Length: 441
Image 1 (spheres, rainbow, N blue to C red):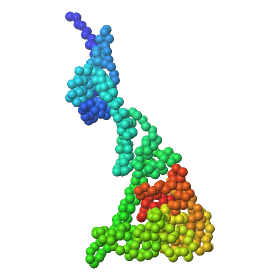
Image 2: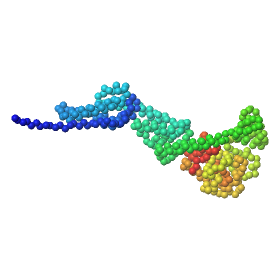
Image 3: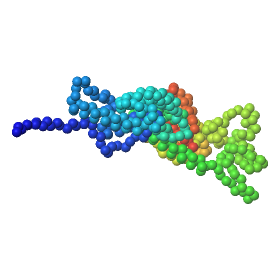
Image 4: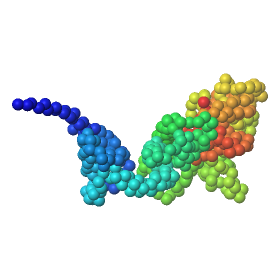
């Protein structure tokens, strides 16, 4: 009996190149035709976690006619299976209406390219829309500046997401230019800064400026409430009397009735009792000339007893005690006045007995004259010449009329003012306790 030897041929198992994990990331929401770019990025990440992302960009392997290698055939079958999974993961991420449209496509790559070609073309129109929103955006005084800057940053983020890159310098300049109208002086201040500013630095400056404005506005409202009305009690009835009527301001009419109430004070034009300056015949005889302006006092209208005093200046308001380092703009002052001798860069003593006449009918001695240099918060220096040294005065005053004569321009708007010269920004100030305080360092 003959024996045959059979040689067994052992074939190594074929390994598939793709492994799909069971646990994967969260599925993206279904695509309904909008926000394609966002959905595309989420789907790409999802397919990457499944090791299927490469099938979006690879073509299917082919088998030559004369080739019958089992390993190659097995690799092709494995690729087709993985591609089938990838395609259906994408289809399951589509809305039902879109699923029916794209379900007939054979491979994952064809499906991905078809979606990309259709909806990225439509997204090109959204770029123009976002740019239009950015260009048309305007900040309003009715909303906080910081909240509007954040809205503008969101639009800039959308522009970057669409692949349009804007430099940080351009973003800073755009935000400055879009500041509301009430921030005009601060806008000019930021424009004149020579050092280039980063976006974060700009936001910090805007937040500090807005906080300062809010606190100063609250202080101003509180001071108005405390001076709003004074109630005068009478035996017969109660009548309201507005603050300031004792000094010749307001009407002679009672606030409740139409009956005239006789004025008990004196007229400061003719010095006769029984009527106010606005009703003075002497004033009418002068042709109703507009000789009385806000915050400006003439020597002859303040007092009849000052003819024997050697006056060097007239000041309209010095009632409130303040910091000796602070400076206040007074349109009624005829001279610059300083109470602190140490602030003078040049100083000459005065021995002529000159006196300062103030709006409360008191006088103060002038002890010297000189030059004071004020360093503004804008970085500019304001030089005041021929400043009077009056130790008894309670506020350092800058004469608005002298600034105007020397070519400076003071623009008062709401509760602030801007100081410029020949179109160049010099400094600013804010209303505080009824007077305008300069922003000095």
